[in-house]
Image (tube, rainbow, N blue to C red; front, side):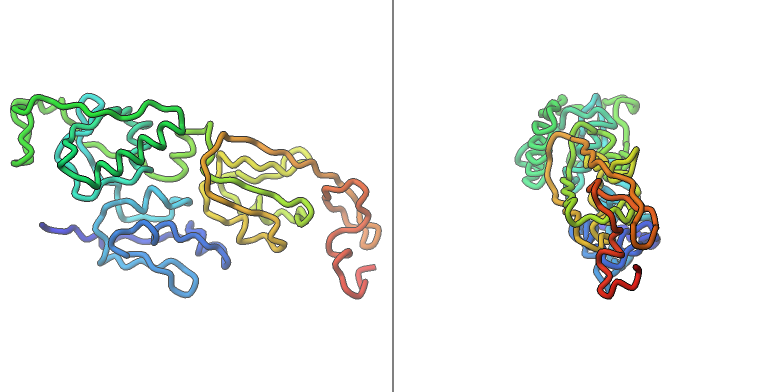
Length: 286
């Protein structure tokens, strides 16, 4: 079997590891079966010669930072995935996008053909049940129509089977299932200084300052971890989960520091000093 080499695969500056020094995302390295991605001096490095073009990395990257590789094209007939199937099954993330973008609800595969595919389907249906979506079922076409041994279709109109791909990405998943969130954002208002670093770093606007309130909307979150990487007081915690999407509003109050006379935002309406003056050891800002 010939393995295609993706000589052009690379990581762009959109990568959260390249944007923020203390970012901890390793999604691409964690899913890559060929170990094409590795962590070098705090940044994700890619060895294009190892890439087998499976495209799994495209579905887990939280910032769409991977280029030079395309999602795998698969074969669809009548809302059914059909043969030939890849030796390596798709991730649950990819299958969820086939469910949403292409309306696939069935698969034409025998249980004994691939244990790995069966495991992938089990994971998919578990996720679909949690999302309140219809699960995938098995659907067989007449055997004389498909010759899996020769990987060719017999007596099937060409237009009946199409080679297709889905648009990959964590952002696509968030848009596909907005009623649920994959991540939980916990804000400690006792630690938060309302400095603005988190909402300025969040490209998805899962954290934002709006109408005198700090708003957290986990349904938008792709799990890049930029917010926790830039928070100097560790006031934010990000954990992976699946739950009903909720939007939280933390009311903020505008005040003027009685020491340095600068305006600032605070969660406590009685606050008289800005965070810089409160934490200054020698009171030199007074």
